[in-house]
Image (cartoon, rainbow, N blue to C red):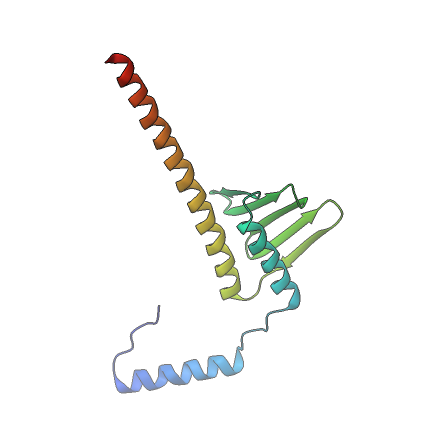
Length: 136
């Protein structure tokens, strides 16, 4: 969200600030390791065979896929990829890349939760209808 700047002088100073900030504090380029690790995470998130878990207190996100023998922990801008042979820890420096990854994980986890909730509601409705038929 962009802050609202009122007045000519403050607006001019704000533009100067943004220009100097971009010039002296440039965004670091996205490394190949960051791209690869985020792509691996995204592909595993999309797989139905992956188990997604979120720890609300520690804010850790877990991806486990037995088909590919992969286990991933996402926390504090760090992605830890673990398989049966190797373990990698990659720090995601790019804000947008990390937030996109976390958003994708959270969205998929929410979709799976919604499917589970719908299944539970359908089972309840079916059970209630069965009970009602027995009573009639």
